[in-house]
Length: 343
Image (cartoon, rainbow, N blue to C red; front, top):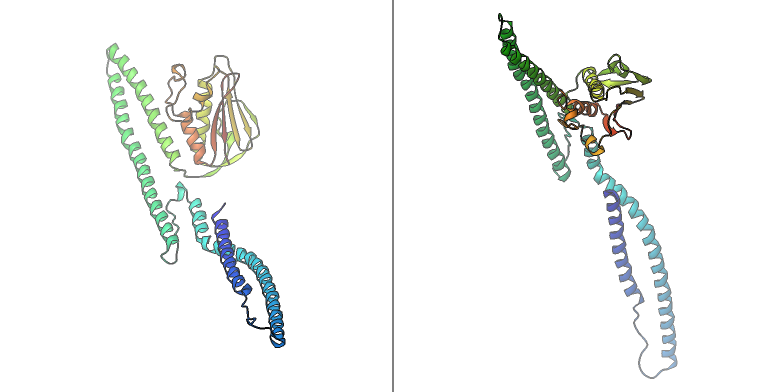
């Protein structure tokens, strides 16, 4: 039961109670009669006066009953009118709240700078709108701070990585480096590559989760699929950031290839608004599969490989940032089914 309906019923019940009280008072006064027949020896004159008095009392009783019936009919009509007027009044009272609700729904992470800016007297509705505006201001500042942190972290972390990689290259370039130094340099370069992939994945994930989607353009989904991957179905077009959308599709496809069984199969199916990536493999636990869309979630040590544990989390965040969704399902016959829905 909505607030408007509750207000309407409240107005109707209050009118009904007040009308019933008014009718009760009218009935009490209308049906109370005063005995005016004199006490004493009855004469012809007094008998005639008594008959006239009785006739007057009967006429008054009939008139009172007619008045009461008319009042009941009028009360029923006014009850219906009061419900209609109460609904209109409740709608007018709640109109600012509906405006606030609609404006709040239009505000997303991409336009947190928008405000309700409700004008009017300093009443409870305006106080609520001002409170929401203050909350949006704090959220906007928090999102801006996180975006600045992502940008600063990207710059600050890439610099020492590049410095360490250059130091390794210089050490290896010296004449006849010891074999142990060469092995250590190779291991260090491998770890640096892994760290760089992890850093890049974290930055892409943060960018997608905080709605930093610049350069939205129409994108043909088939063009996002890596070359050499078998594709079934027809193409469709979505609007979004081509770089992030390409990263989303490539992450899902790479995950299907990396975690496939030797000699297994993998296919991509395109339907209007849907990308389905399936592969062959062992039978997976559906409960564990449901958590693969979170960062650093993996299925056992044999499935970790050299990955960062961010591939499907990035894909899920990119799909959500574009108004879509990513769902994971363990195939009963083995393997994984990833379904991406895009507008």
